[in-house]
Length: 160
Image (cartoon, rainbow, N blue to C red):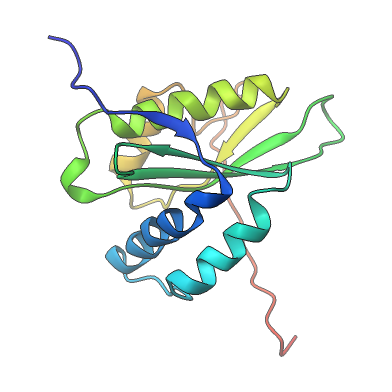
């Protein structure tokens, strides 16, 4: 049986900043994570999206899912490394193929941009997301050694 049609999937434009912000805000709200709100996120996106180091992919019409990606130079490769900063599909649209379609388009864009590798951080407890990324060709282990990959984090606040 063919996968359901996820609807249009496309690279976002600056004009999409408000919708992307709404989706990102919904993501953080759904998972009880702090958010600066739609207005702040939209303003930041209007600044970041025109830059070559940030892009987003939207899926659905109207958009029901988003991937937000940043690129950085890397000493180990000729091309940049991409970080999937955020990936979100509205709950009522999950399981219909939009997330996989967004991820596939994100990989295509990364290839077009000469990206050497894509990194994704997933919470240890989020087994569903881990399975999703693995189904879509990503691995939580080093391809050379087979060792598990770990993500370390330190916030730098004003008091430091």
